[in-house]
Image (cartoon, rainbow, N blue to C red; front, top):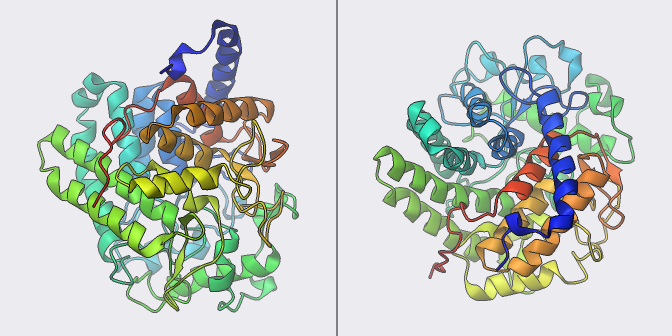
Length: 458
């Protein structure tokens, strides 16, 4: 097997140029304490962005990668949640919407343990953080140990997972639920259309869409959907961000829970490193894997589907979220086979050298340009590429890796791209695109929990 560091010599100069370009993006987007996803469209710190960014930053500066995660966790709520946005107080409120004065975290979230001195959002994003912390540690274990990086982060990461597996297990089935379409990170996915249809949107004159200042309306969510997002967030705020309150929108998402399972495995390794008991985390990872398969696997579709908790039914929309569980090492063999077949089938194979579309190419809601309704994203490509390696499918992983690197460079590290043509969409110089480019250039994926050590969960 040829590793990613053993590519043919003719590509070495191109890889060096690509790596320098990616590093330049991360350097330019660094604020002194963390990295913004984009200087224009996303000027604050985002939760799962920072996790992906830290994974790439470890190849430039382990200390900066550590600080990325530390800055995010400094805004953790007392109930364990890691908010999806940590706001920069130096920026005016109109730099982004919903802004700090909308979320009102320090006041509305007081009973849930929101920090008093830092303004954040009240919702969360996918739990990539323990995985990121483990990979940052592995980049320089001596530096990590000197700064007691894992020792300090372990209790915070454990509290984060506790929050998701207790307060967010809304159905009692062993999986974490999301209560807003922004939480699974795939904001505008057709998977949310049916659950969102129950939401009466906020009146148009009650908010201003700052995203349209930097993004084309054809690429962004519709005004109707955006109004529903705003109303859901306002309702959650009105409850004091209480997870026990009724939720109009409550969904179990495959990507979110797959990342939680993998991060529990990472937390087990972190626990062993700091002298804590890894067994509870290993047990949780096994339990999550079983629940993921029993509650979200759809044999007919050949991938995982979201479950709408309002009617306890799977949502019949096929998205890239259902392929991300390839990252979970303990999946049954027949599930891995079916996922691999779906990945290369007509619904998700956009052609040679293409990335993975965010939604079924043959689906009724497919759009080649609109946010999460068809375009391909680099973070999901990275997750699937790493997952293919976890399950020993190196030839397919090599092809996806090559497509990722070619597309990232050609698109100037775009936020996302047309899944067929690779044309850049959204903003450019996007931080996680640059960070994960660096990781694919410099890491072989063998430091992922479970890589080379697959044992299916019975």
